[in-house]
Length: 210
Image 1 (tube, rainbow, N blue to C red):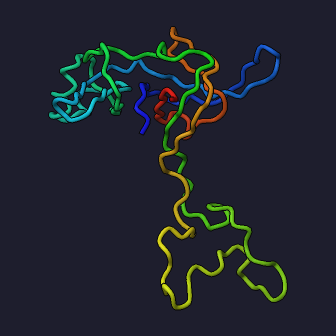
Image 2: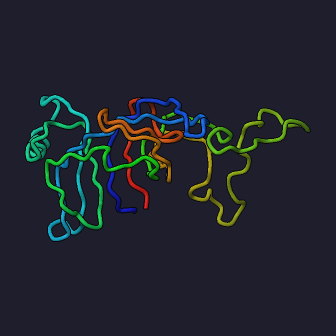
Image 3: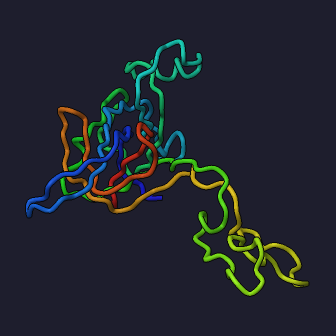
């Protein structure tokens, strides 16, 4: 696991910007932060160094008592999402300090993690890009099937991890080394080149690339 600093945000959608040479660049607009630090974990106490950050304000009635007591220590209200960022060193961070888009710069490479769109049950052609069966010579109602899935007698079972039909999407996806096209601190906005995982308004974690 890369131990780098990051920030939580909300995917607003996609648009385009013009590069210096006049070319069109597709970008994803992310409303990132401010993310208050809600807890600092140290190697002496927890066995590792990490920052816990939060994002998205919610009403007090939506928080249970243990979480309320935990968030009251930061004094930043009640937060919808909490994430932990393991770090090699903690630096000068303090509980209650806000992390903002200022930690990034235009042209910097980042990695973005999110939950991909759930697309329900899908066959092997859509899910794993199988080519399908032949369409002639007596093939009947097998055109989109996956074919044989196992061995005859040895080991005589379906190997674990075999690519088959099943749930498509709705899983954690990370895209690596995507470029930050623009940083707008006054609006808490990041413009990230290309697409990032998840639906509109989906939660994403943007971290610095090593």
